[in-house]
Amino acid sequence: MPALPSGSEPGGRGGLPPSLAVGLLLVGVAATFANTLSNGFVYDDRVSVLSNTFIRSIRNVPEMFVRDGWHGTGRLSQNYRPVSTVGWALDYALFGLDPRGWHATNVAVHLAAVAMAFVVASRVLGSTWAAVMAAGIFGVHPLQTEAVNVVTWRWDVVVAFFTLAGLVAYDGYSRSGRRPSLAAAWACFALALSSKESGMAMPGVMLAWEWTIRCDGSTGRLAGRLWGGVRAAYLGYAAIAAVYLVARRLVMGSLLHRSIDFLDNPLAFQPLLQQKALALGLLPRWGRLLVWPAAQSADYSYHVLPLDLGWTSGWVLGGFLIMAAGLVVVAHRRRVPAAAFGVMFAFITYAMVSSLFFPIQTMMAERWMTVPLFGIALATASGWEAAFPEADRLRRRTGIALGLLVLAACAARTVVRNRDWRDTLTVTEAAFRVVPASAIVNYNLGHLYDEAGGRLPEAEAAYARAIAIWPAYHEALSDRALVLSDLGRHAEAVVSARRAVTVRPDDALSWNNLGVVLYRAGREADAIRAWRRALALSPGFAAARNNLAECRRAARD
Image (cartoon, rainbow, N blue to C red; front, top):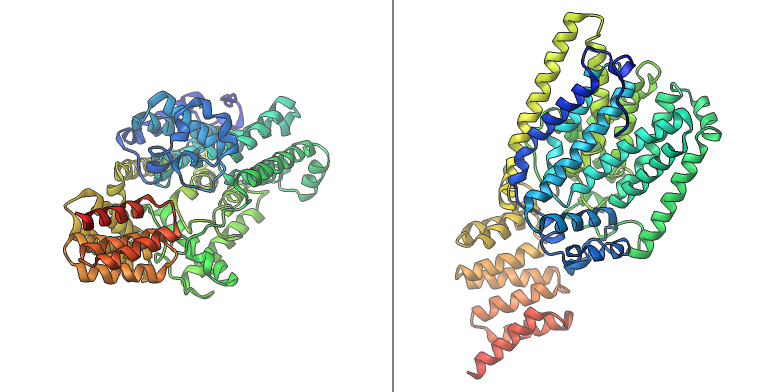
């Protein structure tokens, strides 16, 4: 870790020794996330960890740089994130499939990111207390719970760490021209990119730092620095980005993840101008979650946000107001450099996952805010410092008390939210309470109730709600058909299964399920035709082949 500022430096004023401050801060963050250690593997963990044979041997580490991270699952994630995959392999080598060790790694990485957040904040804020506020908000805000609790989504926390560590290294190079610092900054960029694509934002963060902090907001000075003093840094960033993009193109066959499902991100299927309106309409929703994170969900897909928002709707106008407020802060960058940098940091890192510039796989997810949250926290701490100046001791003490109260409230909410992540059913039921209009949440509930056994009526009701929200939801139609069949409602089951293959006539699984419900309804000839259709679509489909063989064997007997 880079050296913390001493008490005599600007970051150390305020009567609280930096070493004590960061120690207490890390203890507080660790205590906040301690109850995550008893949680299990949830959501994507069931594929990327439990079903991934690729990560079960350290010998596979070199191959992880030339393979999809889910190579050993039989499925493609279309994510080229080798550093994250190597991290899973190391966890498996150390802990096997004991989730406690994996969650401990998540917490450790988050603590490292918080430490880096404190170092960065100390360099631009006027006191140690302000740095504690910035790093504390970043560390214990409830929006961090998703990325810290889910092993697969650790990559967002890893990117946060490498981005902040890279910024510390870049600042050392920018101040002194030291080559070791430059090499460290380049290494952090390469590691961030190899952890998740959103690491591509790092050079933009460095430019914002150079402009607002090193060049005092002067565009002319920034141009001079880019032409001379720090030109080598950005040439290196460009070379690293080019190598990464070539590697991704060779391994994945594409630069962008284009397999977007309508239910995950309906925004991507709207006309271009409507896409931008909807992306702006998400900003007030983020603002509400940042200020009052009392109702959090693991899903914000269709139909959580209305798709018919006009440019004059309240959500979109709210987005414009948030953007305008940020621009006002940046315009006053010479007066409030820390706040201006925080706003730019938040926007640059959020832009990678916002759908403002290009649609991504998921419309909105709380883990998207893991990295941008530092910029918001830094801007907030800058405002706190202005509101409670050190020169006025009474106001300062009041401000410290209020700040600690806010951090305590955030930590308490985070502890409660962590409990939702103990298993997939618990967190999905929590999501349903917040976003009952989500088709995916209802479908997931149906699947989980079906898996649980003895909860078939609840499973059928959940599937029915998903279909009511999105009538073309072929997975829900097909799975509901199986549950209806298990409940003895064979006629309804056949109707639902036929609707599924009508919606997706090229889906072998839906044809297989149609065969199952037809067979249970006593319509063996029709069932055989359905299974043959499944095999025509997917000749290697073992379930359809086995069902067909069993049907023929039963007929012979």
